[in-house]
Image 1 (cartoon, chains in turn green, brown):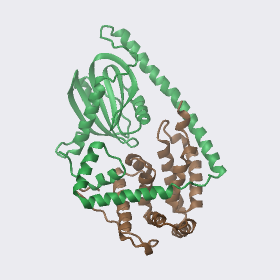
Image 2 (cartoon, each protein chain N blue to C red):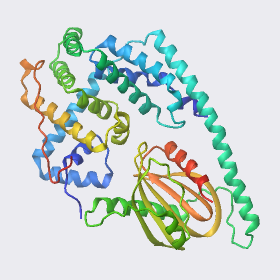
Image 3 (cartoon, chains in turn green, yellow):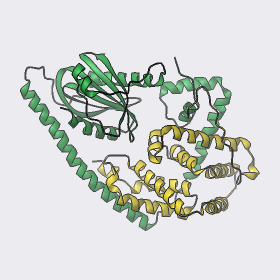
Image 4 (cartoon, rainbow over the protein chains, first blue to last red):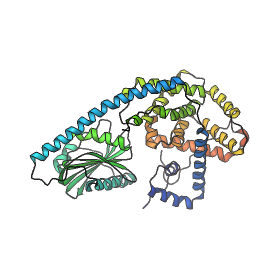
Length: 254
Length: 183
């Protein structure tokens, strides 16, 4: 069942900020509603006119503007450098943990720890869970469960969840069955990178995967694995932003 | 490495200057605003999250600088008038399409500032709704309703098709809801 077309849908259609499936539904609606179609055409025309009228080449910026921009660039590059060092340390800690766990629990079936180009199966599960969560968010008859008790989840499912930044708001938490036990799907509202899904699941193969990005049609994901727990963040923010968040979350586990 | 690209401030001068023009509606004031923004951004460089969205961060500083400036100066209406005259005189009004373009631009510049800011970021700079809402520090619902009102106003202006009174026309927002209501 498709949800009714709203004014927001028409705006998002004009701005091309809508997934292909929804586009088709809206186009179908527009074909049957000439008035709405005329509105969309007018909006598209105005958008193009505005783009055209501001596209004219700006005069060369004054020299002092270049100087201020250059100074800012250098200041930011320096910060970026400091951050990179910290990131290398975080990844090194993660790999170190992997080796330690490997040596301790030698009896588990160990997958090849070299980065494999093939997407782990749990990433696909994470994407499905993310889509289901979006569906649930749209449905009024499916109330969200915003009460989040990581201790209870860990006790009941054995799935440890990362510490979330204070300004993140948990919108929905669901426990689902998965291939190898249970999995947890959380929907989180963040201030800077929008709505995210955090997926955590038990997997049978012991593995250590540092945060790795994967792109899908409508979303991008960052996944990682520590031992038999696999995690994936799915959202629509840039791959860089998602990766950064995953790198911050991963070390709060284990 | 792509690191040089990530802190490419000079490459973002175009978007910053365009946004400043839409906000201030005055060329020289826009250049001052961009300059102030760069200085302020440098002072606050520690608030930029490495690997974060540089464009959004800078646009948001520019917006806040504009709001702060405007609280100090109250001569905005006069400047709007001077830009309106400037646009008219600087562009040869030869073809009809050119005239139409100017009229749409003027209608855009006559929008209330909050609607102008949203429409600029979304329609001209092509920011995602999420990014634009973060830049303006407003909830996404507010962003959508401002965007809807801005579009409705410009549409009403287009439909009015009154070529003679384009400079003074302040179209009335006309938000039509289809199906379900959002904020």
